Length: 106
Figure 1: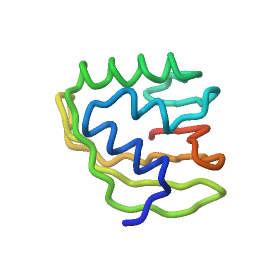
Figure 2: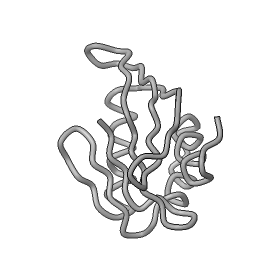
Figure 3: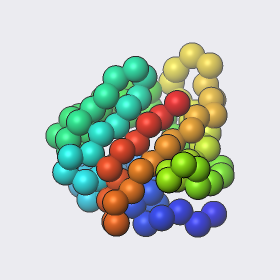
Figure 4: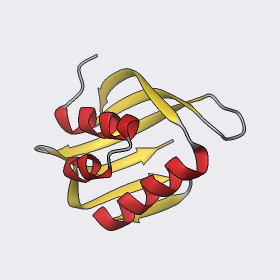
């Protein structure tokens, strides 16, 4: 599956627990919406990712990607230490050049 470079970096950094690489794929003013919370800016996004990895000890596997309404929507299987695992989620990415400006996980 071909993913835009910032999205490839997002999933690769997640697998590797590489917070420095994660920061390179987001724009400085990016937002992430996950579990009914919105995280704005690199520091908040980094803290969100560290907390989620620690809390759920999860892995994510992208399954499919489509373009929809100006977004790259990735369907992925998430498995970890949480009720109902594994689950299939959608990751709706908005990009500006080589950076993620918005990510909504549903």
